[in-house]
Length: 573
Image 1: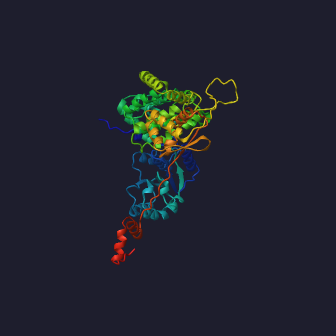
Image 2: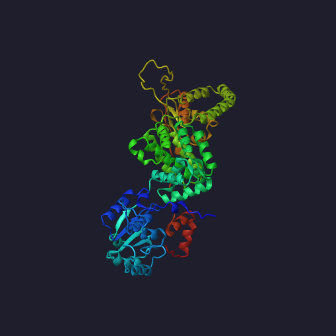
Image 3: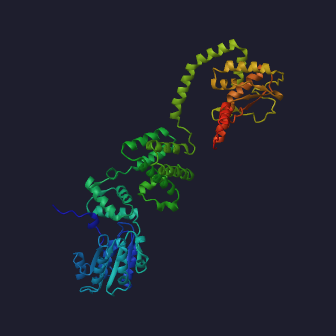
């Protein structure tokens, strides 16, 4: 069986020209070689898998090559290049600082530096993961790094530059390697696929490039994984299934449903996503990225911030035309808040569903609630109303026959009900607004009543008060019992003062208005005003000290004080 070599090793660049995504660094190094301006120490820093160690090896190979070409690339034919390619070069030393980070390891390295090269021009020391060296090892390395022999070159590589002491940094030329762009990684994967005779969708390679997060080595590892899964045919579907990536089709479907304010479809689509095994936070992060892409692609200047294939960019551009930039900003802010609070939620599925429904609510030009939700509710209300109507009619007829005043009261209560489209709501109470121009004579409302100003006594007020209770205690027992507990008091200018134990009773606007209308009709006076007051609270003094306790006991039982005097007792307070 032939030994398999992973793509990350098989396609590792051997020349500066083959390095992907680091043109500025490779050009600088080639110019330094060309003009013989090589520093004694280099520091290559940047994220994982972007070519730091690879460039260090290419630089070491190039400066020792006997026959450099015009582009400052090694010939791969001379003795030095051949020895390097066969991993048999005595001029290039690699040290892994993660496992060789002690003072003794650095002292051994310094001892080797004293020996000049036997073949070639330079001895190159590559120290990988240099930030793992101990503080003592760094200090032991300082003098040699500052004043090395002319034939010695040091190349340090690290992913965490901030962990290296400043005295080391000041002795090195620092090269910051950047993340490789999605387009560069996808292009290189396409080159690898062609060499391996693998047919791959460019859309699938783009997904692999995005998953690699700027690291070409990770992208090649993922590529090998997908090849093992799907063989010689790499499709977009195979990639998202193998990497557990949520298909962007879901996000396009979600945003279309948001645009139409179709809450039912939003919840059904999210249910499909959950049943496919995806996490809610994974979904909300992906939706945020989708909305961000819609916002970015609206402006040609920010198009470069979007890393997608040309066909996918066109789909984003078409969908973005249906959304305003302001709405997308609000939606992004909402998704971000629900992402931050996701872990603190107990019902995580409901947490995301609420976010989706709120996204539907802020949709521009959309109704507050989708029609398919309101129809069943309205139908149920109509059904209940039809069932209750015979009983309501029966009750009304019996009431009218028993008491004419009650009939008049019901008419007045009905007048307080809000007119549709002309009401101001206070929680569950709605009061009718006055007309915009009360001076208009041709008012068809017919609600204005003639003013009445008949006198009435305290006794007559109490009789009417009890009448209201007899009728109203079945309709609103809590309110009726609360006002019946205390007798009303007639004040000046037909003001009626009544006591209530709870301020909520006084603020029950609808029931208070019903009481006022009843009294106006019963007492034939339209100037009646109601004033609710709370009874004063009795302050009871509590005995805390021993003196207060004794005085309270003596007041309640006088014999205690007499006993104290007869026995001539002294009580310490």
